[in-house]
Length: 418
Image (cartoon, rainbow, N blue to C red; front, side):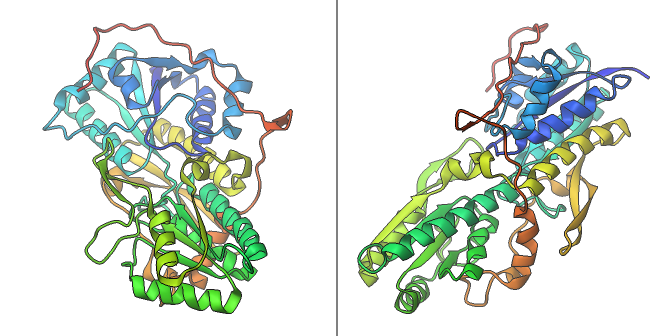
C-alpha cells in the first residue's frame, strides 16, 4: 500500500495531558511504517498548516517522544484560530489541501475541542469535494468536558482533580483562620457554558467542607445564594464558594463579562470571583479572599489524574488506528461501561454529530437547590480523578521535555492568513 505522511496539530487552550495524546499519535504511527511515513506537526496549531510551518517529529528520538506523556501544555504550540465556513473562506481550506499535497500528507489528526471538531469535519468534506484522499480524525481534548458522544474528555479529569484538591486545601486554610479572619473563600474556575469543572469542587463535601457551587446551568439567584452562604457560615463558621466563569444572571449576562471577545468569537470571561466575594462582603459583612485558578488548573501536570493521562494517550493511539482502518471524519470516544469498578471501552463517533454541539451538566447531577452536586454526579466524577501519574523530578522540580521541533523545508509560496 502507498505510504503517506500524517499531519498532527494542537488547537485551542492546552491541557496537562494534550501531549499524552500527541505521544499516542506519534508512537502509534511509528509502529506502522508500512502505512504512515513521517508525522508532521503544525507549529502553533492549524496556523502551521496554513503557513506551511511544519515540524518533523521524526527528528525526535523515541525517549523525547515518550517524555511527552508526562509534559504539560502543547509541545508544538497551539492557537485560537477558527477557520470560517467553506463558503466564507474557501481559500484557507484549499490552502490546507495544497500543503498536504506538497508534503504527501494523507492523514489529518486534529487535537482539540468543539471548534476543532468542526474544522476537522470541514477539512474532510473539502478533501472529498476536491478529490484529494485525506482521512481526517479528530482527537478530543477539552478541560470543559463538553464534547458530546463521549463519556469524558481528555484534560478534564486532571483539572477536576486539581480543583477538588485546591478546594479542599484552601478550605482547610480558611477553617483554621475563620474565628478571627477570613470566613468565605471564593475560587473561580473555567467553564463557559458547562459546569463540569465547578462540579469537581463539590467533591470536598464528603470531607466535611461547607461548599457552595455556582453552575452555568443554573441561573444565578443573588438572594438565594447569599442566604445559603449566610446559613453555612452560621453553622460552620466559614464556607467555600466555587464559581464557574460562565455563571450568569437570569437575563443571560455573565457575572464575569469583560466586554471583549476571543479569536473564536466567544465572550472573554474572568472576574466572577471578585464580583461574588464583594457581594458577600457588602450583604453579609464577612471577610473574604478569592482566587482565580486560570492557567494553573489546566497546566498542573504534577498532580494529573492517572485515568486522564491513560485515556489521553489511548485516544491518540486509537485515532491512528482508525485512520489505518480506513475511517474518516470520526472521533475516538470514551464509552463508560461501569462506575464501580470503573471500566470503559474506546468507541468512535461521526464528526458531523460532534461538531458545534455541547454537553452540559445533567440536571440530576445538580442538587435541587442548585448549589451542590448529587450522588449521581459524584459517581460520575470520582473515577476520573483517580490515580497519580507523577513526572520524574530533578532538583525538586518536574522534569519536562522541550522538543527540538525541526522545521520541514517549505515547498510553496508564502500564504497570508486573514
